[in-house]
Image (tube, rainbow, N blue to C red):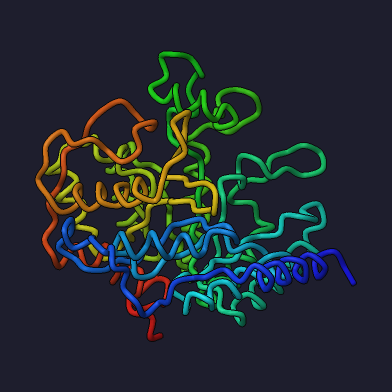
Length: 374
């Protein structure tokens, strides 16, 4: 029995023994309060990361925050942990669905690497995967045996992008990181506190590509594979520059974006400008938060030196998203303080735009429905 199968068996046995009491997908929590803070009853969070021990806690938070469906982008790899994640998803009546991830072993053997991952994509699709998630390690961490960083637009990956198009699996892709992470790691850096908490997020110097190079590599992939749907996470990976993101959306009809963990950044821009952006690209933007949920820890867009967040903090994290999109609040506190010491102005979107942002675009792009009857 290989190691992959052994791991699946161990995790499955653990789940069976622990019998997590995931709340019913058909019951509304008695503490449900989202309608006090939002004009829209339910949403799909299209960008989350749930540990295998966090599904029951995730459902509780979802019920409190008005999240009907949630997309776990950390679904894992078939033969390792994807099967376990799918089992846990079924225990939520598929309120939580999974994206599959790439197995980066054997990058020095292109043929084997491609065949393995194409096989995994097909297996994952058959098991219910809703898409493929690519982490920022592509371009910033995955290396060949000789030490070279693998580029986002490396031709070795072309068959994988094509297979996603054939299978109808959207690709959520994280490329680069905030622009500040590519600047000197000094007290003058506006994200200094966040970098202090996560020094490995500094990509200044060394052999790292520039921010601009990474964004260019991403565009090369989107342009080369028009048959494949790409979701540029974190506001198209360039929340500092909505004009550029808009140009990308104009050029590439196969490109969508989510807003996960970047409201504090794009919220710094003029409220009317951002209001108009969400109106213009109303069919191309997905709601997501980058929330991370484990039984003993929460990740609310980012994390620093603060006390461990509670479920109530997670609900407030969601409420601040709703406040930004649904009110005209001026100089409101944003939802992830460690991402920057500033305030943002809300953009008060109309209900029909909110419905597209909150769930209709995810229904279209990811292929799930708000109420789970797909």
